[in-house]
Amino acid sequence: MIRRLRILWLYFMRSGSTAKWWTVVQAAILAGKFRSTRQVISAWPAGSVTLSSRVALFMHFDRNGNVCAPVLSYIQDLAANGFSVVFVTNSGKLSAAAEAELQKICAAVYIRRNCGYDFGAWREMIETLHLPRPATTELIIVNDSMYGPLRNLDHILSKLNYAEADIWGLTESWQQRYHLQSYFLAFGPKALASPAFRAFWAQVKPVPSKVFIVREYEVGFTRAMLRAGLRCAAIWRYEDLVGMVLGQDVLDGLIRAERSRLARADPIVVTRKLQITRIRDAAAHRVAMNPTADLWRQLLLTGFPFIKRELLRKNPTAVEDLGDWVEVVRGHLGLDPEPILGELRAGMKNSAP
Image 1: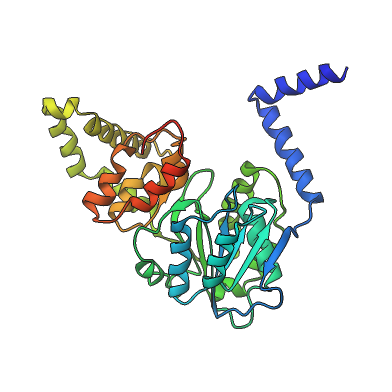
Image 2: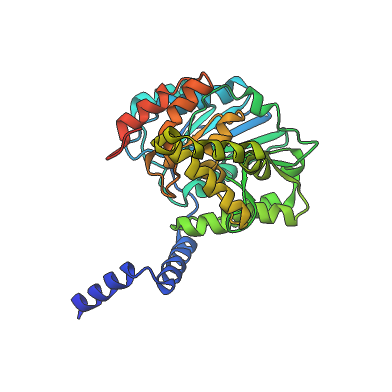
């Protein structure tokens, strides 16, 4: 009987049905209700943590407990710009070398179990450190889902004008519902003082479902803040990025390429054309795209300092024109792709950069 139930369960899990999705998510929600939100297993320093008026909560994950050079560079850049950086890893461990390097840069280092993904970690840090404190004027939450920064963050941080918006993201998405993408979110004084801000984080549960986390917390956060009357804005606006591909000059370029026998045959040119056509088709039919994947080229060419890790490692949405990302970084922008290439050499399988 047990064997038959196990076979039925395996068949159910492989079926890809709506019923399966609903069942798995509901089970995850139930599990999240019974899990403790307190998952820290190690903290440095052991006592109280001194923080400046500007705080950055940096969420990290590496199954081996390592911290790569670009992540350290990212943290150093935040610290150099006046932020007290609190590093929290969901890896459950840190290598001794990584911990020693982090303690040179960060105001605090926390090691926790991987419960609740990024939002679970951010919620616990906000609670543990009593954020925002009376002196806190700015809070940034970030994670390591991006490669970079390829350039210093000064030009980004200077654009976080809290007279124009209360909450800033780097990019915005219309997938599912309009929202600021959560790999980088910055909060000014009005947002930090809002009861809606505190209420949102108080209800975050360590639900073991990425689908739920994205829908309820990443998308849900922007929705809750907008309902509370807070102004949300992105530095790289979706319509501006799409507009770069919709212009007549881009269309003229496609027409010229079609007239050239070499351009029609060159695989690099072909993939660029395919991606441009894909973006234009999505825009024509009002299909929401993911800026950090579909519009990676437009982002880089307008000063965006990151490339999404999952895009280069797995390219799950089959973006067509990734083959020349190194050329874009090195040739067009004059930046160094080597830190990213180093990470790809260490971790990427069955593919070339």
